[in-house]
Length: 130
Figure (tube, rainbow, N blue to C red):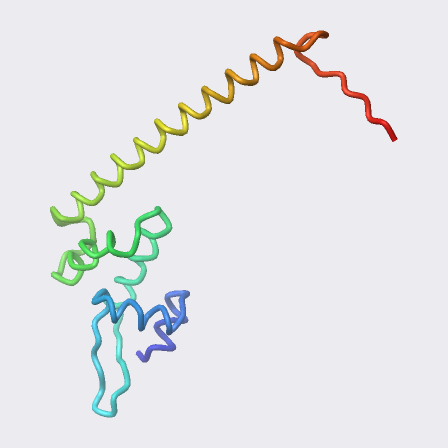
């Protein structure tokens, strides 16, 4: 298939495909007349990249998964390098969750303090003037 068909089937743009090609994530095969040509395996690569990006992986983090597929594995996460990226991402996510929990605790403490300082109890009684 040509680049426009692959882009349509993958739900992306030809510009994105050219960018992936320039980054070495998508193979650059050409016909005799210079047109880029792709197959179903390339569509699988793009689906893998998109799924990982939807999960928050940056483009470079998708490389081991793409290379795993290219080496003939049925899934992009069947290789040690892919598993290492998963582990790093989980560590990163755990750190973010810890940070968010700390912020949540601080906001909760601020709310408790603010409610306790109200003269009429926890429900503020604000009157609108108009």
